[in-house]
Image 1 (spheres, rainbow, N blue to C red):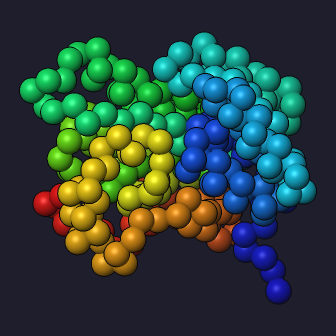
Image 2 (cartoon, rainbow, N blue to C red):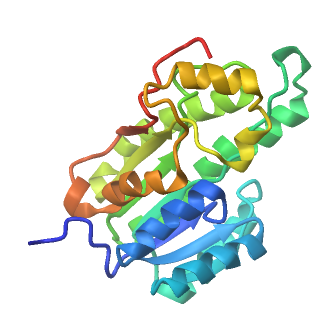
Length: 256
């Protein structure tokens, strides 16, 4: 029987692949045979993920880039092309959050979060997708959004706004890139244990989240692998673009 999720021969670039969730998704791509470039601001953390992939029989290499600095992204892209010849899958998983109340947000904090979550994502896609089109490589771009993008959450105003922008960008570029055979979709995670959200997780907030999540638990990073592999596969999701795939335990409230 044909394996619809086989990614053998594909090259995946995991931007933010050194993060908790990004690493899990990158490992999922490697487990299906993709050659994976782990791109992160912290090269040491990226090297840890690369080593884990290699120890599991996969192929990976680490690259340093900060999405808020486009020149480092361009440099990493050149290095990845030298290593693998190009790429077929781009996973955009960097993220930054803050729990600053609305009336206390300063322009510097707004810009910092937006530079990573939205501006960085847009210009990373611009650079990587342009090269895919030039090389006539059809493929998949997978953005990581958030449950807060369409159901705004308290205490994360800037983050929610940035992820709403990710949703808009995803749908716009799905239409823009379709003639080139490049699919653009987004995964919408619910609540997962990750560095960027631990700072806002006091007991009262955890209880509220559980009360509005039918599965009554947080997600595990490994539970994002399936959605990532599905969207990366031309065979499994070749007619899927501009779509948001929710992995959120049934999260359904606007009152958290």
